[in-house]
Image (tube, rainbow, N blue to C red; front, top):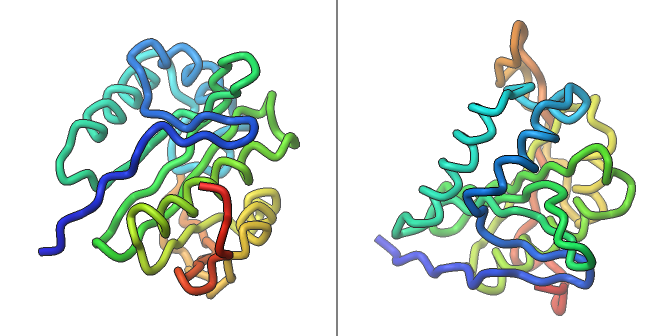
Length: 188
């Protein structure tokens, strides 16, 4: 088996810090994970205090695993230290990962999802030396599709009724970008 490189953390962008979660982050997570607007397109939620603790505990455990197959990172504004969401990579092999992100509704429209996702995809190609990064979003989630398209990801298709969300099956668009398609010099 190929040994997995480790992503050097934290990752800084002009406005954000992507870092491993810390135990006290559950309070911020609780605030946005409890918001029905935030979880509208997610397979889970809204969550209570126990759910926020469980999420942060899972992130802390993933951060200790070696080899590390999952990076679920807190997205923190550099200007004031406020945790505004999360962004993650889930490695399915030493060559490929899926990207996910979520920004608290209070911070929507500021470009944080695009900035965090761009930094993480750059790190996936530059530091983890991946071949392919994928992402999915529901067709109704126009804002998320826009983020993925701004990253330069290609919509490869529609996955029909592949995820169960609360009481129904949902479709997703599948997006991907390959290492040789990723712009050289993208901020990592």
